[in-house]
Image 1 (spheres, rainbow, N blue to C red):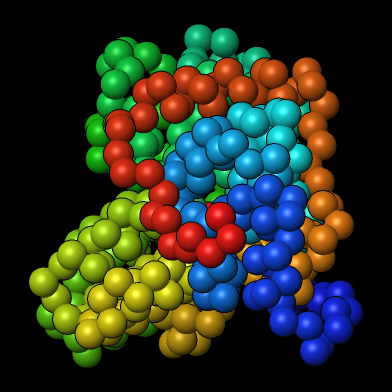
Image 2 (image 1 turned 135 degrees about the vertical axis):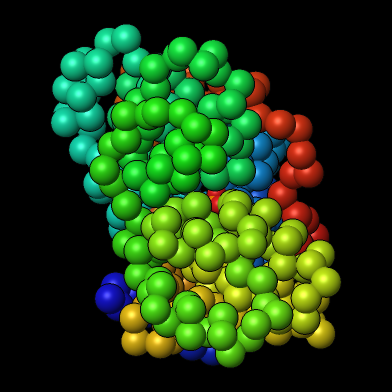
Length: 332
Ligand code: 13P
Ligand code: SF4
């Protein structure tokens, strides 16, 4: 799926210099997720996973947050920092998990189970967040679910694979919304087994958005930042990585002597595992977004206030851990 529609920008323009000039001029901070193109990660002030980036967005003193990630991530920044201007290079950068949980249907589901606490993965719309008791990310979900009383009934939405993983790991029954990530569903168990046979000493690190048939082969399961930590700190020379391949850029920077192999899709290569939504953001769109301060995230205040509560709850309940990796002080 190639959705990228690059606007026309003067090809002679030095985009790196222009982005650096504009971010200073506008007192903007550039936050980037690990799934962004390497050049975007390299120019960002901070790169991190969903939790790292939420924390950064909540505490920044910049006037403008340029969010290089997908729309729900930029919405989180706006929910937590309502007085900042939050812009996203491409407003069409959605997420299949968000799409798989329409707020009206979710509201009916929640109302049908009034004795359940509602936990939602951060990969959902602001309206779904507004119907939620506690938001979680892949780096704090296990900790937060484990902290709830054992007899507490839980709805978990929208990712059935992350929910299933938590349920198996913690031995808890949860009512799972049946959403999935189209990217993590593309990994092929058959091809992964072939790759593991070719590299018998290579550990497998997987994101919990992967289906169980992939996660069950993993030596390490965790968020993008925990996969990065595992891959760079592991004694192994070669690591098989079952998540979006954008993360491999930071792995190569942190451990250039190691080999990181993206887990394969059904065709035997990993190109089908590139997130088409994340890929919508380009350097050209980042430049235009800084220049024009748009497209801008705009949320209705009632939804924002309701969505802020479960996000603040998440920040309170999250284990304290290293914040986003500061990858670039340029222009910051
Ligand atoms: P992380 O919070 O692990 O970065 O995951 C975000 C995401 O969208 C994974 O597909
Ligand atoms: Fe959404 Fe999947 Fe892309 Fe993450 S990788 S942003 S869950 S579609």
